[in-house]
Image 1 (cartoon, rainbow, N blue to C red):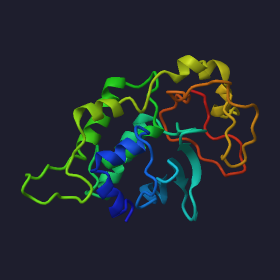
Image 2: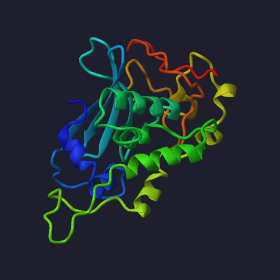
Image 3: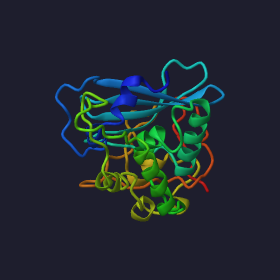
Length: 247
């Protein structure tokens, strides 16, 4: 099953999302500690999300036809994050494709909620429309609260995501990175890897070597650099560029 039952069950628990979006201290011994969700796209390609709940690390990769393990795309944790690997038009399309393939994952729903951390809101996006989409995805995960005399539907908690929590999580994608980091069209070329535009070392990417360290005292960058609206041109691991930054 592309999305394991354990993850589907956890998705209805507000405590899971508080942990997933770094709003709470990770549980000492989460159960299960490791999860993998696979979102088939087309032609044998799929996005793969690995959740390490013990260490609070979430990694996104691209599985290619015939590939055994996904190619790293982005990751998010509490120390050396590098999360921005998708555009919102791409994520919207991914959600629609997944829903067609698996009616138990309607759109907007769990795929959008899980992958939103990897999709920054860029200047070309309609921020209000993006947050409407994400809000609908999060609210879709609510389950009816049973009456007090009825046994809870789930062993962990009968609670559901509140509007306050949804409003908080709508800020996860963030906005404005290009404005803080420089306009890519003016600072980059087709052969420039986009993390290097802002001094990110790109550790963990196949074939990349650090050009310079992350800026001293830098904060998490709340947006993406690429302005392309089409799927990135994926290359073999020995190629040093991930995505062209040309318009």
